[in-house]
Image (cartoon, rainbow, N blue to C red; front, side, top):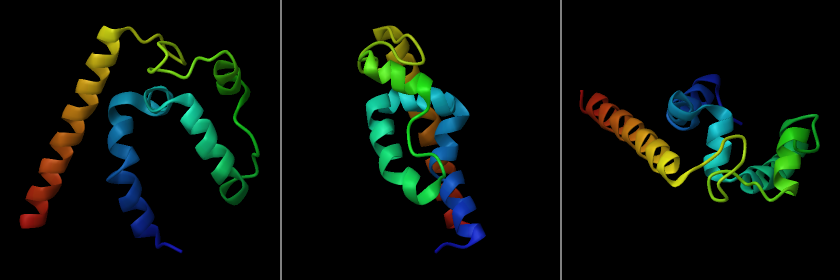
Length: 106
């Protein structure tokens, strides 16, 4: 499958960078709880003993609260809050991309 080093690099250079700004629950809200539920339903059988979304997230989805795109999920999402968090996450990801590119040059 993948080496330990490859797994660490994949996490550090992808989801790890996002989590430093938003954390796992805010990341799910920003991506859409309905989307995370679909991904989980697809991946859980291969990666976990769990076979369904945890109850808090499932109840939010059942209520039509998908996160940022509906204004409510684990967090309340005003237009101002959405812009702020999207900008912060984007700035952090650009920072890391520039840093990674500089390290590649060395």
